[in-house]
Length: 39
Image 1: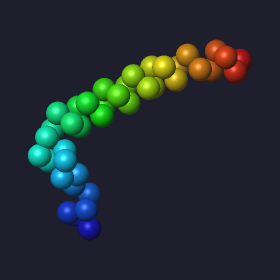
Image 2: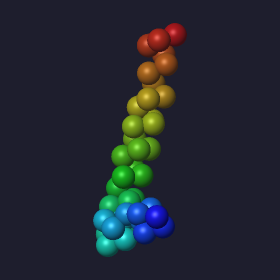
Image 3: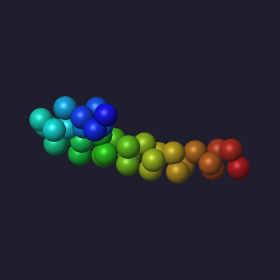
Image 4: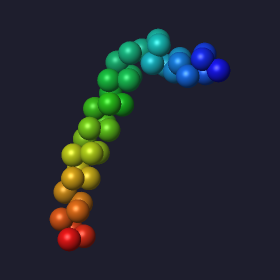
């Protein structure tokens, strides 16, 4: 079970994880503007 929690791609290429985090941050930043449309 513990081995399944480790992402082999992240273990080989840590920058891949950094890229995913950056993408999530950008998506969150864009999502912050969405509530204005619903309000």
